[in-house]
Image (cartoon, rainbow over all chains, first blue to last red; front, side, top):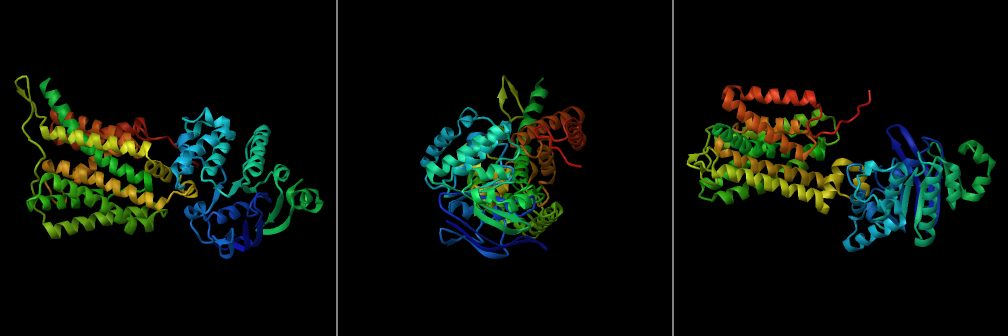
Length: 235
Length: 292
């Protein structure tokens, strides 16, 4: 569904991504692994249009989206939960959710969307009128995912969802991601430093190192590959 | 006692105008983190347009509508053409641009209209209300000024709080990058913010014009007080601008009435210094941590 070919991104003289190829299959979870500074977040930020590409193309369902603004990319069906979750602390939970649905044309469906999110994430239901800044880390991550889903994306980009969360909360989120893939056929591209968690949920995984793709395989084989595990994943 | 009531009501009607100007500055600060030093020039131009309508035989209400419409357009154009290139640049760039615009607008107004102050008619009578046989200084026109400013503020608050447009504008102001990822056209929200702010400023200009007259520099003092109101309130908070404006109006009115009108400017300075000493982020501002 997502085809990336020869993607190169430069910040001034620094090459953050160096001709990366990546294919994400519909209805699958793909993990992007690698150390700090490997280019994982840059990859997501380039897909969603926050960062411009120096070379290469990104296609969603055979439509080129390279060079589009983030406002347009989300309307093409790609929702991006950025690093640090991108909570808007000053807004309430309900407002954050409504905001996620505003780019959709059909407003009544957006209202159904909120109801659906509150069933999917029951913790949010009791906090609807609280400001986002009062939520716990896990609740914030759930709200960030729920808000992204309000746009009814085909592809969900998640940047480090496990960061700073307790294992039990991470397990909740992993279960939700599986549920979204299996029940709704959602395609997920997941960036993680926590390789074990990511490989446990992903169908496929790629490893980035200093902006280059150094491994690309299905998640089980990659988890069993000692070379990759020792060299890049610290497992 | 009667003097106290007179001063309080006078302070209130002046204060709501400071509040409106403060609110215009706050709307722009919140949206784009820019202090719009050209605000005085912009509302001076729109008030001159309203004056032109009236001197050509148009009604007060037509002139008011023209001023507000001109404010909307002027605000949007200024943001699109002059401010867009300096957004997300060092703050000094925006300071230079807005100051430059102020000088430009005052220069153009001087060339077109000349420097002579023109009188501007009030909307309603300017003979004070009679209360139990005494005539107050508070006039029907003052009442109109207070009511219209409060109504506009309530309307703006409702738009921000309850409409999708307001939600988008708040998200664009608080977290522009996140807002873009959620599909909010942030640039457009900034334009709308500037347009609304300039329209509020245009309203304030028409409301204060009967007191200050209309000339290229007529609104300078009012603008300083409006700016003071915004800073007292916290620069980030629309309710803060309203509270700041009304409190400043009241204090200045008491200072003028009990101590003498010569020390009004000093009074504003004292209020500002005291508020910032007690609450450095203003009455309604959020304390933000700073990394050092």
